[in-house]
Amino acid sequence: MKIKTAEFIRGIKASNDIPEKKLPHITVIGRSNVGKSTFINTITQSKKLAKTGSKPGVTQQVNLFLINKSLYLTDLPGYGYAKLSKTARKELEELILWHLGNDQNFPIDKIILLIDSKVGPTEQDIDIIDFIKQNDLDTVIVTSKADKIKQNQKVKLKKNLQNLLPEANIIHFSAVNGAGVKEVLKEFNL
Image 1 (cartoon, rainbow, N blue to C red):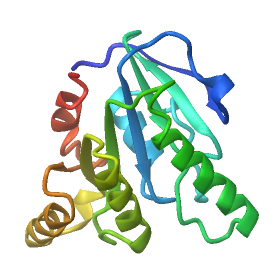
Image 2: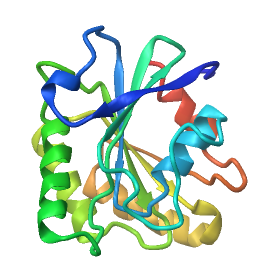
Image 3: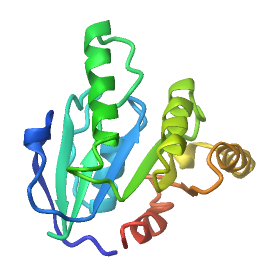
Image 4: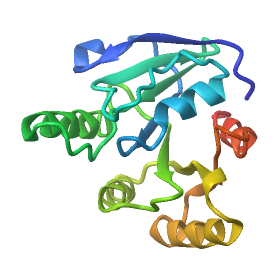
């Protein structure tokens, strides 16, 4: 898919915020500071569509974007941000799980799970992968910041991720050099 238009629609925090118009829907999820906003801005070729910050934990709601007026893209809050209060972390976790499990009113056609190439899958990433497996969700794993690791590390990471989620397509991605952008955009052809 070639992305021609991308616009922020609104933040979602509850069922009454879900759009009425039914369109295909892709969700981006990953731990805090994995680079979700940078990923969205890179694939949409827009520097300011998704807000980025120098501090993790900027996204506190499910951000809804309309791509080419024909597809919804949602950006979930990052999980695992330790500097939030326990209550705030719990609320974000509940929001993430609510959105992932909200298949009747706003079904997700595909999940893009970002994993930091330098860090590899964390315990929280593995919890999300287990949730994905239990709910049989179509998933693509995108390894962010892939320009920061060597080729042999990419091979090892891909093998590890395929052991965790064998049916997922795994794409090494870099906002710095554009690696993986074309492969990611192919995933938008639902």
